[in-house]
Length: 233
Ligand SMILES: C[S@@+](CC[C@H](N)C(=O)[O-])C[C@H]1O[C@@H](n2cnc3c(N)ncnc32)[C@H](O)[C@@H]1O
Image 1 (tube, rainbow, N blue to C red):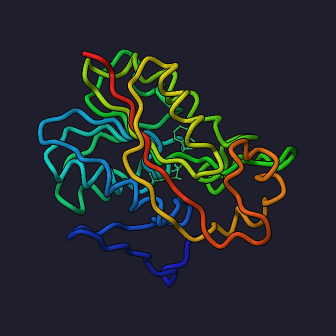
Image 2 (image 1 turned 90 degrees about the horizontal axis):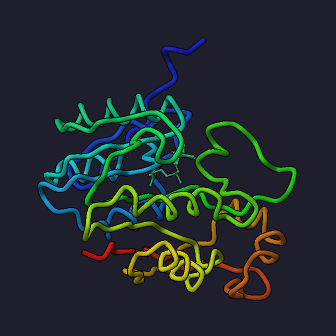
Image 3 (image 1 turned 180 degrees about the vertical axis):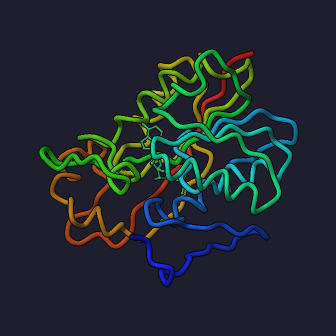
């Protein structure tokens, strides 16, 4: 039973206020890094996949975009709607896996700060915390599907924008984007604290770190990248 004395977690940023319910991941350094490099233009049609509490989606809507925000967790879809209302903007929140909620639709910008933590064998779980973090054995499970489906969901000249941890491999990311028919670039990079969950999985992460980005010893930081792919006109 929900206690009436449980409190409400709030996050305030850029003049907006966001409620953060139990089952939805609070914003992290990666969420803010992602939002800072989205460069949404007024009038654009934007899709955010895995929107969580709707931080990027609400900010994009406030910037004048027409936004569809999806998540696989029903509680996230509810809070995206609530946070959009709280900030006086319209965001169309839809429940579902990857592109399933937007079949046949096209956008100017498809973006995601996806779950991408490499997950050791036997550690797969089906709960909201796992959905926010786990990216399959090598971290690419959801991103691979986002990248493969991007062209089908972007207008000519449209952009795909996503974040990766360095241990997924920036060269690998650029190659995957190019193989999907988009012109790839690294838009930004930033050093962030090494994530607590990555310490817990350090041995496994080293085993999938094909570009040898994790230093020997106890890493203190990880580089984070924003990758963009543009559809040719
Ligand atoms: C790392 S969190 C990012 C949340 C938010 N965008 C942010 O930047 O703070 C990833 C989000 O993706 C959602 N997610 C996980 N798997 C998904 C899938 N297959 N399709 C859509 N959303 C998914 C999770 O529920 C979670 O809200």
